[in-house]
Image 1 (cartoon, rainbow, N blue to C red):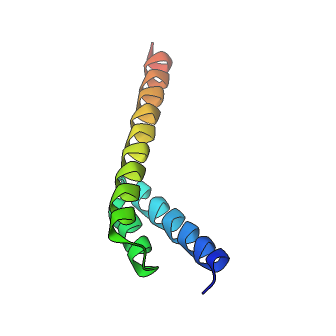
Image 2 (tube, rainbow, N blue to C red):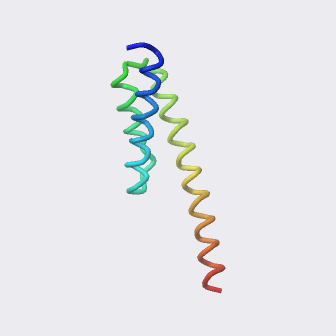
Length: 77
């Protein structure tokens, strides 16, 4: 498998994992770990990438909750 094909497959798997995990309210670190493990990335790269991705998704989810709660508060007032 060449680099281009592996990159497209990795992006697709991570996007699918993120979509499925976000549907139930999780950050999706297990999906990122599984996708990178299936493609044979080095464990050091997998650990740091999954950690950073999980933190970024958690922050985005938290910011989204704040925006939604502010909108609901203004609608009720």
